[in-house]
Figure 1 (cartoon, rainbow, N blue to C red):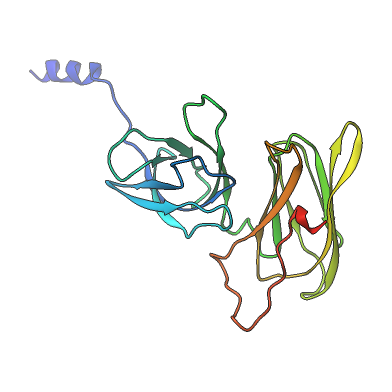
Figure 2 (figure 1 turned 180 degrees about the vertical axis):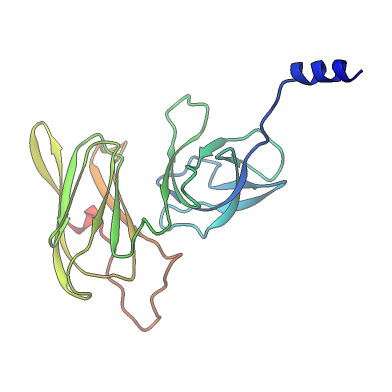
Length: 233
C-alpha cells in the first residue's frame, strides 16, 4: 500500500499556490470609454468601485494582485473582466494610466503601469508621450526627451518658488515645432503627470499636466501655480 501511494503521489501534477499580495493602486484616465467611467477593482472576494477622472489622479484603493495580475470589472458582480493589469513585483504603490484601446480590441482600456512610490519623487514631472511624435522640453535647467510611446522624468532644479521658463516641442517631418511655452514656479512639495497626446479629431499634438493631489494638498490660503497645458500658447 505504501508503494502504491508513493507512485500515485508521483503522477499527480503539482501546482504552485497562487501568489497573492495587496497593492495600492491609483488611476488616471486620459479619455473615457463610454459606459466605463466607473470601474471595479478586485480585492479578494470583493471589489472597490473607482470613479475614473480625466482631470485628477484617483484616491488609492487596495487591490489583490494574483500572480501579479489585478482584475478590473465593469461592476461589482462576477461579470467577465474588462481588463487585467500586470503589476511588477517591485511595485507596491502603482499608478495606472488608462487610455481607450484600439477599435476591436478585447479589452476596452489599455493600461500603462508606473511606480507611485519613492521612485516618483516630489518636484518631478513624469512625462508620458502618447503621441506619434518625438518630443523634447525643459523647465529651467531640467530637460527631457521622449520618443513616441516612451516615458521620462523631469526633476525640477532650483530654489522653491523660483520662476523658470518652460518650453516643449514635438518633431514633425524633421523639424521641431513649439508645443507650449510659458513660465512656472519651482515646487518641491508636488509631483505631476505630464501627458502628451494627439487629438484624434484635429490631429493636433496637445499636452496636459495632472498634479498628484492624493499625496499633498496645498493649504487653502496658499495660491497654486496653474497646471501646464498646450493651451498656454
